[in-house]
Amino acid sequence: MRILILAAAALAGVSLTQPAQAQIALGETGVTLTTTATYASDYLFRGISQTRSRMAYQGATEAVHTSGVYVGGFISNVNFQGWDARQEVDVYGGYRVTLAGFNLDFGGIGYLYPGYTAPQGGASPVLDFAEIYAKATREIGPVNLLAAFNYSPNFFGRSGDGFYVEGGADWKTGVWDLTLGGRVGYQWIQRNQVFGTPDYAWWSITVSREFPVANIGTIVATVGYYDTSISKQDCIFGTSQNICDARAYGSIAFRF
Image 1 (cartoon, rainbow, N blue to C red):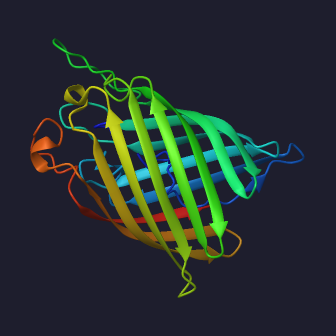
Image 2 (image 1 turned 90 degrees about the horizontal axis):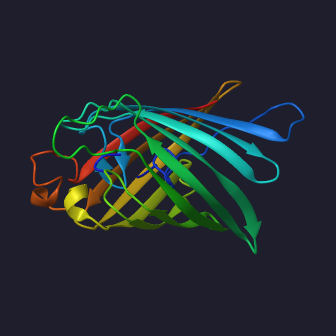
């Protein structure tokens, strides 16, 4: 994620804003498979565009065992000015358990950029990085509260320790089957001069609705607003890239 720069998780692909997925049981193995294909107006990871405000084409799949152990993957196009990375592939795994009414999730994720060629001469940024994470959600009536913490020992571009926290809520409004969601996150980066931005906050508000398709799957439509605390002159070394600014967002996800 360039500027990394997630998100959705939380991983962007696996972010807290990612739509719920359908499940397919794999025989008597105790494993269920979930798959989602998404077409979006942008790929936003923790509030920052990974496609330079262009369309994003994404896929995600996850296998979950009845024990709570899971593994998954996510792929998306990316577009970073001056670099030849064209896709991001995330691989992750972890364990989920419910305790005292809280749904807990502990795991790790690797963000990979296959095909990327580091520039010749001078600094040669390595884009690949990894994080560990802990998440918690709890339903209170029609509201689902959530929180997440991520840590990377060497964040995007080898920018040192990266600490990230996120909180939010999803409210099933009961009006036209709409769900209203809100997120607030904060990213700390050890070497801001390497990463290209100061430590920053981001936030969003979204509205989504599901449309079941008989015997096939479910379409999830989402529209929203995203913004960050990063000023234009502080966004990616003060370049003219419009990737940290406020923006409208829209997506169509197909779960099958």
